[in-house]
Length: 417
Image (cartoon, rainbow, N blue to C red):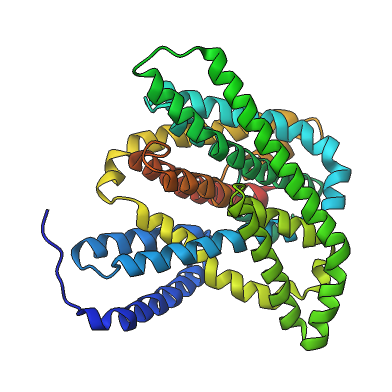
């Protein structure tokens, strides 16, 4: 491997980082505009920017340790903003009203998507238990944002199928984040037992008992946290917002609300529930009064700035040498991703709509992007034992191919309808 070329001095580190991140911001906006002009998801461009940055960085060390720290921090902020947006844009009352109907589609589809993905990763691709679990959990989630953009472009969002898609996808997102948090809490226990089992024989009952205890502790911690968050929202939300209105305009109120979201997310992270879970809960809590917060256009600007860095960081973490090596695994997982949603969603959504409507909903649930990538990235942060680099690269391919393929197919299918 050729040594990296050193062209910048230590004293130019901070100006260089400012220049790089300014350029990345501009490039992200240009990329988003260009891809949306062709009705393509901007996520693809963000991942590509991260991949190109990784290739350049291996030749010319632009992103030193400080740069990677900054990129990682912006990515973490992007995760919080992303999950906060998912929560605050959810209509809890409408979701609860449609829960019986949406659950008939969501629960079987989640199982049909996640379980085969686990077994394929575990026994066909020959990965160990924990990476296979992370892959299975990631496959349960969908990326409704990719599909909704196409539905809105074609004027179909207000239809019966569009509403059913939105409710089912929201359940997918919430369950995916909850499963990620549970897996994150039991993964260290599974690792300890797997390492111990390689040297001594351990009874399965001991493992099951330990997992039940860990899952019970997680459930208790989660319920207590939700109760405290709801209680705080019940008694503190309106007084705090009134105080915020007295000291500023709608922009001030919005920043204040986002600050509350960050506090809740940070608290969830500190007690072991993870930042994404806290951000999602904060968004759900504040979704009742989202029209009072002036979400547009101020929040949209914050969203546009931070979200690209989450996907850029994902692309940057992919080892370029593993892209071709993991291509076969990526294609297998793409097939699993497509069949899981098309079969699982298609069969059960047929109970509530026409055959063609069920086909549209099932195809719209195929993309794996935001939530799936959050899960994969969280696994990668644990280390190789939870998410190997080649499997990480394969899942990035799943994200890219499913988002692109779904967008192209949906445009044709919705216009044909």
